[in-house]
Length: 142
Image 1 (cartoon, rainbow, N blue to C red):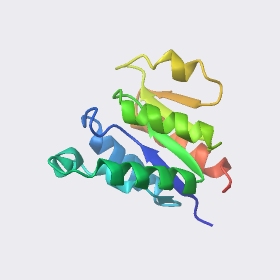
Image 2: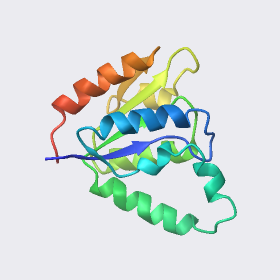
Image 3: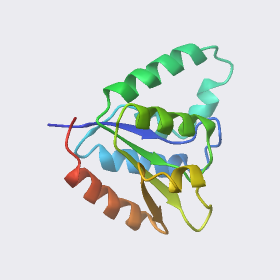
Image 4: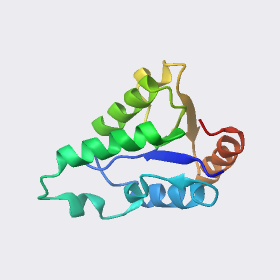
């Protein structure tokens, strides 16, 4: 059975890693369903400009989080929205797997100090995909 994955990545906080998000989402979609595949669209922030849909976006994202089996987040680019999603996912008891490029940032102590989160620092995309293989092989549906 395909799991439902909530993929978290920066949108309004910065889109420098959008292509990486897309590659990660495509990789995950080989075996599972990514509810938030739009996060990997390289021009997502441009598509959202001028739209007064924040309430709709919030409601949809919270519904997807509640529906998901687990959260996978790429946290290299700091994002208030991703931080909120992580706290909400923890509150809902969703397993959370977080990635960040250790060559670029030092992840917040609010994440690294919280034993709830499974933190995966990486230096190459190969590191990411190897960890994703392990996560996806061992994570049951809820």
